[in-house]
Figure (spheres, rainbow, N blue to C red):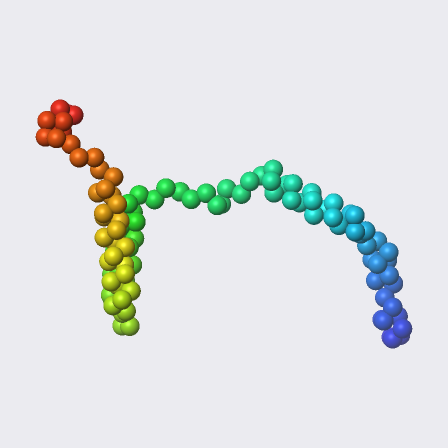
Length: 106
């Protein structure tokens, strides 16, 4: 095998001749950017999570942490505070009614 032939591989020179110019590279990047704008990414849209789902998720996480050998009381306490905040927020959204207004809804 000829070492000169290995070092100067013929197809390597062909690929250097066919390389893109700076303008072609810039145009290719601009085209990709315009395609991204044309089709917006729907993965960033968050679905609505109800307070009940959040409450249950925090409760499950709290129970998991309590069951671990290295349970961290500060972390469990922080989760309990989050849970209390979820309950408080869900109660704060409710509208207070009079007895007459409550029974007249039926």
